[in-house]
Image (cartoon, rainbow, N blue to C red; front, side, top):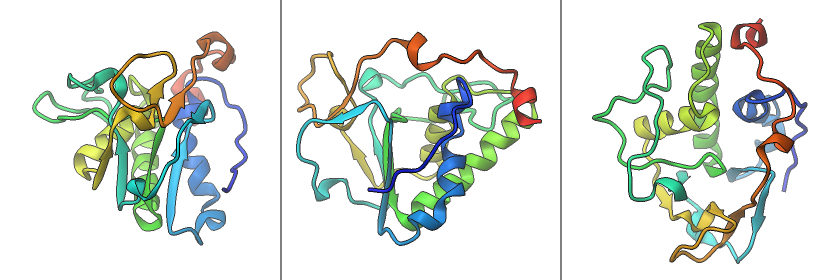
Length: 185
C-alpha cells in the first residue's frame, strides 16, 4: 500500500486531477508490478484476489450496468464519445492494471484533461469521462463486475466486494466550483 498525498483543490479538481497526482509521484509507484487507484470513500468488504490482475482493469459502473451510461458528448471535450461508441460504462472509483499500462493511462488522461482545461472545458463526469474515453480507445483486458465498486445501500445480485460508501455531496465537495480557465492558469 502506497499512500499519495493530495492537496485539496475543490470540486471537481480533487477528483479530476487525481491522474496528475499519481503521475507526479510515479517514482514511489515504479517498483510495483500492478497499480490500482481507488476512491478514498471505498470500503473493502470481501476478499479480493488475483481475479483483478490484468493489463488494464476497469469496473462496470453499477448504475449503468444494463444501459450505455452517460458519456461526455460535447465535441469541445477530448473525452467526447460518439453515440456509435461505447458499450460499457466504467466507474472511476476503482481501476488499474500493470505498472506500464497504468502509467500509459495516466499520461493519456492527463493530456486530455489539460487540453480540455486550456479550452475552458470540464467534462460532464470529470475524471470518469476521461477514463471512459481511454477505455474505449484501449479496452480493459479485465472488466470487473459492479461487485468491485458497489453502492453501499443498493440491492443487486452481486457480492459487495468493494463498497462505495454513501456520502453527502455537500460534505465532500466543500470548495466552490472554479472556472476551468482560472484553474488552468
